[in-house]
Length: 131
Image 1: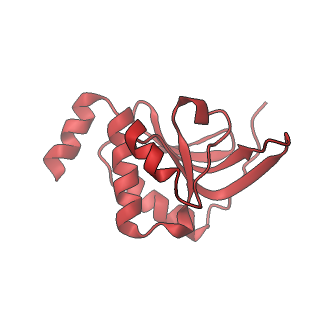
Image 2: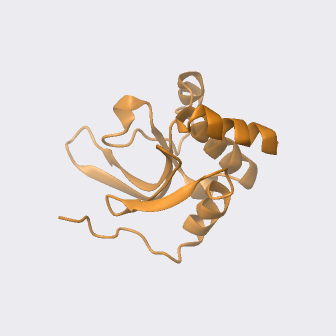
Image 3: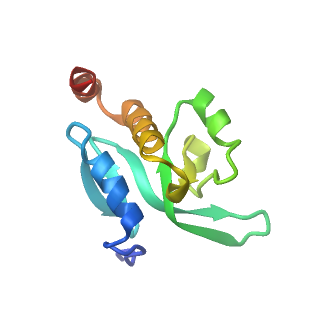
């Protein structure tokens, strides 16, 4: 059974994310589990996520950016007040940040780092050539 769509396609935060994510070499977008996901061979960013609370409840973050940073960067990023560990992806190193708190440079840097951590080496070389 398909997951219901959990985002507004006209969301301005999604537009910001799309513009930056899709500017990376060979990046594409698909809907995964009802949310936009950006990928090459593997997903490097998700729009929106959920955090599981210690009480067992869930807290939705519909305009969050989910990324896979380097482990050392993740420690620093988790100190931000808007950071959270997303359900399902958190145990493998993914973190969530609210898009509205990120300026364009931070958004680009975070997406690029996650892209480098997930894209095939040949595709990452295209990114290096682009710089």
